[in-house]
Length: 105
Image (cartoon, rainbow, N blue to C red):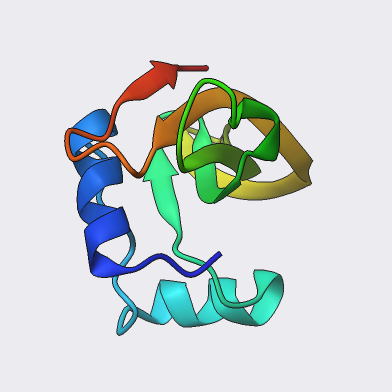
C-alpha cells in the first residue's frame, strides 16, 4: 500500500518509524521486488502497512504492519533476507491524529 504524507506522519507519530525515501536506490530495488509500497526498516526487518479490515470494530481506519524481510547476521555483518510475508500485531488507526497504536509485535 502506498501511503499518503498524512498516513506516513501518523505512523511515524505512533511508532517512530520513518519510511525509506522514494529517491533512495534501496527503495527502487524494493519496489522492483515487492511492488509500489511505502517501506519501513524496523528492528525486526522490512515492514509495509496494509488495511486491517479485521480491526474495523476497534479502529476507524486501521492498517497492520506486515514483515517482508528480516535481518540476519553472517560473518559479523547484518543482511536483510526475504521471508514469507508475515502478519504482525502492530495496528495503527490512521483516522486518529495521534496515530493510535493498538499493539506492537
